Length: 307
Image 1 (cartoon, rainbow, N blue to C red):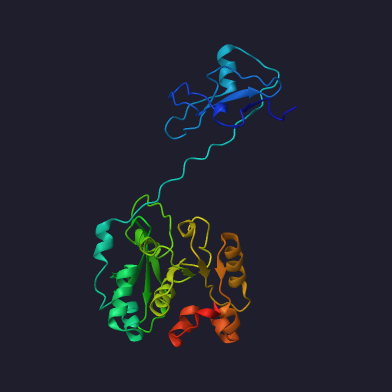
Image 2: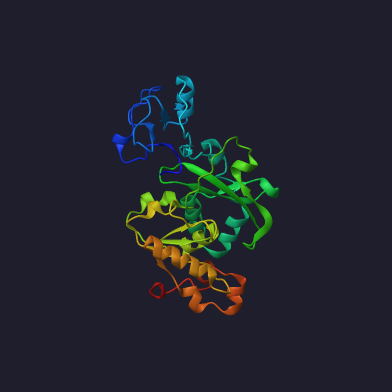
């Protein structure tokens, strides 16, 4: 005997869902059944799956009360309906376009000019659509997350010193700073918009946006994307990479935990995971958490065969 006398009929296909008596939508109405007899209650006793657009829910108790019925057992189990996922919010085009300037003040861009020729930096700025913000006293970099449809899903503000090092405590999201109401942040990989222009090219994934940009300047045979954080490598973000050869480049860590975590992700998604840093980084470099960009800056003739 079931713990509950009345339950919504379990889903076994479209034929186990009926036309809602309220909104008239077919195959959306779940009826209550009696677990002791296996029979349905009245046709209108049940719940519409369209919780936001309809919300109809007529319970066994309401049915019994309305008809003067007093059953011996009235235990009812009603699983909670999960609302449909909200679509991602997007940054307004005017906000985005207004950031694509003032590169002579952008500290990260100025740092890139110390490493690479003008034309190469200009190409990187245009390719990744790097922005500039007056936040934190000016010269702050905006890393825009743009999906394959060229929707600007988010912007991450990071202030760098002119030596390319991040300034602690000076980081935020554009939508938070601008106080955009009801903004639904659904991130994508930094650089995702580049994929549609580079079909078939191998993709390298790193953690930091700055690392992806430097890697793109020094190892242009690959497309470089960034997760924006060690914990941000997930199934949803890597969907656009189906059918590609993908190599992960985890940052160093003294205990190797970051490598181990990304290696597990690589195995899960069918990607490769570079062991170069694990094999070549010194203990001090591992303790400092260096990434592939630190090696590429010093050795631009990096041997791809070691990946």
